[in-house]
Length: 117
Image 1 (cartoon, rainbow, N blue to C red):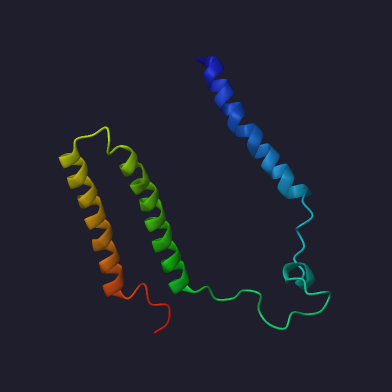
Image 2: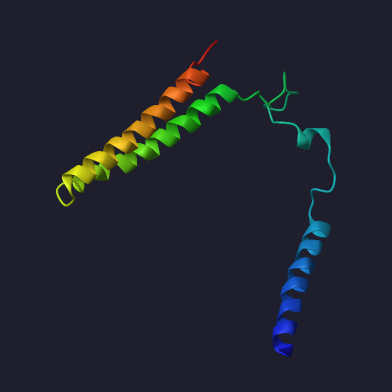
């Protein structure tokens, strides 16, 4: 029990000491304007390097990823058709595709698929 307690204490103290030493020895203590601004060939930047991110683009990208994963789930359905009951296979495939179509219809009605308004 003593060894377990000792190893636990050492596993907390040793990383803390390393982190404190790294913070004290790091050269990034001084924040000046040149080092914290984006680099543009030695000139002052004309405008902010932080461009606003289009939330519409992010939403369409997430929808694409969701439907892309679902397509990867549809592909094995054709392979298991021969080894399963045809009635159960048809019902489960139709149910899965109906859920996909309902999700697509919902996104369409919410206006998430329109790029510009």
